[in-house]
Length: 339
Ligand code: ATP
Ligand code: MG
Ligand code: FE
Image 1 (cartoon, rainbow, N blue to C red):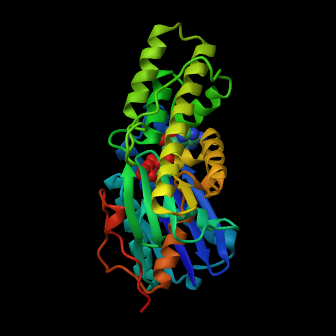
Image 2: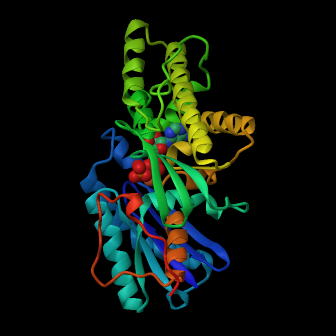
Image 3: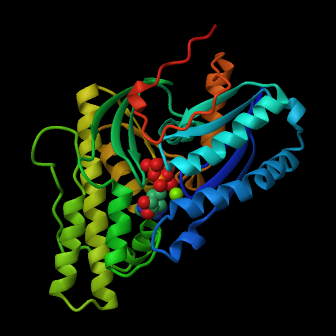
C-alpha cells in the first residue's frame, strides 16, 4: 500500500508519499514570502498558488521516490479545517486524480494530521496519550485513546498560541511569520527584566487565554524606549510566559488523565524554549514527551499522507463528491473500523 498525501489548508502546499516502507518522499512549497508583503495570509492568493504548485510537487514526489501512479493505493487530502478556497484547491486535485487513477480517496482532518506527525519518527509514542496542539489557529489539549478517538480536555478561549506569537511579533516590528522571528529575537533577551502573567493558571481547568499576553507586550513596549535590547527582553518574557503556561496545563492534563505520555504538535511545537520547558516538566513527573521533527511541526504533506494511510488501510474512503470543511471538530472523528 502506498498513499499520496496533499495538504493545502492555509499557506503551504505540501505533498508526500507514505507507504509500507514509511515516508518515501515529501515536498513542500511555502507561500510565506508572498504573504509577508501583506503581513498575513491573503486567502485568494493562497488558493491560486496551491493550484499552480500542486501538480509539479506531486510529480517531484513521484520522481524522488522512484514510483509511479500505478503503484498508488489511495489519495489523502486535507478537507478541513482551514481556508475554504485553499481547501477546495487541494480537494479538487486530490479527488480528481483518485478518480482518474481509479483508487479511493479520503478527506483528512488537518489537526489529526498535526497530532499524528510524531508517528513519523523512529521512536513514535504509543496510545493512549495527551496531545497538546499548538498552531496558528489552535491551542488544544486532547486525550487521544487511539487514531480517531479524540476527547477535548481544554482549549484557548481567545487567541491560539501561534496567533499570539504572530501578533506580538508584529507589534514588536519583527515581521511575519512572527513565531520564528520572535523566538530568534528572544535569544538575546534578559529573562529577569520583565515578568509577564501566566494566564488562567491560578484557577482549575485546562482552558487557555493568550490575548492578554499580547496586550501586556503592547503596554510594556509603550512604557519603554523600544531599543533592540528592550525588544529582546519583551520577546523573552512573552516566550517564557507562553511556555510556562502551556507546561503547567500539560502537567495538569497528564495528572488528571493518569497518563504519562505527552505529544506536542503544530507550528509552535518547533519552539525551542517551549520544548525545554516541557521536557523539564516531564522529567519532574516521570512523563515522556514526543515531538515531530522540526520541519513537520508546521504544515506539511507527510502528516496527511500518514493519517490517510492509516484510514485507507482500515478500509475507509470517501464518496465521489469533493469535501471541504472550513470548520470541523476533531471530536467529531471516528476510529476507522477494519472491514
Ligand atoms: P492550524 O494548524 O491551527 O490550522 P496553521 O496551519 O496556520 O494553523 P501551523 O502551520 O501548524 O499553523 O503553524 C504556524 C504557526 O506556528 C504560526 O503561528 C507560527 O508563528 C508558529 N511558529 C512556527 N515556528 C515557531 C517557533 N519556532 N516558535 C513559535 N511559534 C512558531
Ligand atoms: Mg502555515
Ligand atoms: Fe496547521
